[in-house]
Length: 295
Image (cartoon, helix red, strand yellow):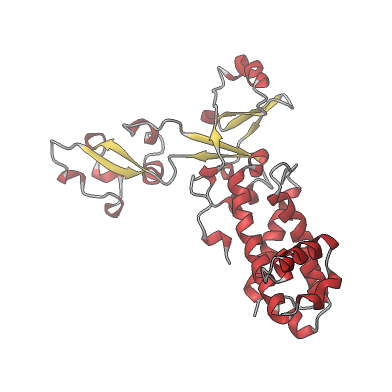
């Protein structure tokens, strides 16, 4: 499983960004404090005001992202920056009056049709914003005819705790649990042979299934820590067939389980500060590595 090949994008967790200019932001600081906002983007000047610290700072160009930026890349950026801004013009195409442009402004292959071929009855042409920004940086924003409902979205550390991030992570951890469960069931078809490695609660759930003649293997009830115990108690060949290089490597299931539990319990914060992001990323990559190596 490669979670980065699936569609989990920045626009799923952004909020509309309230932006200010140099002339207005100071009068609005109290307003933003009342809203419990921390950052006030002053986008025209590539600055932002930090409400908690009380001064302006530069916005790094790398803080601007497209709305289709993958959530994993958003996590990586938030390791370096307190927030990122989703620029909704990036990656989109917008209507421009043809008579506001000249052929010489653009290379031939970057316009949908030559401007000279646009009829008088249809004087608009759709042009990618990235092309406008590259070739007419001083005029790009003024040329666009139809404005977006809002241009900038903002994503902060707090937004990592939103459901779309949890849903993305759940897919990885659920796939890992499912595949390891299947491996254990195939290796130990008799559930009773591994009960000694499991919690009393897990054994209890399984016994209830037996009393109801459900025929469910105990592996269906096991958590990752119990799977870790069973795999480590097995021979080296089984350990490797489960995607681990050694019994010591199986210990990675413990840190994966810690993040998995935060994902599964909506009342727990996944991220408290920037340092926690690396733990999430490590768990994702460790889980994906195991899944890839399962025989």
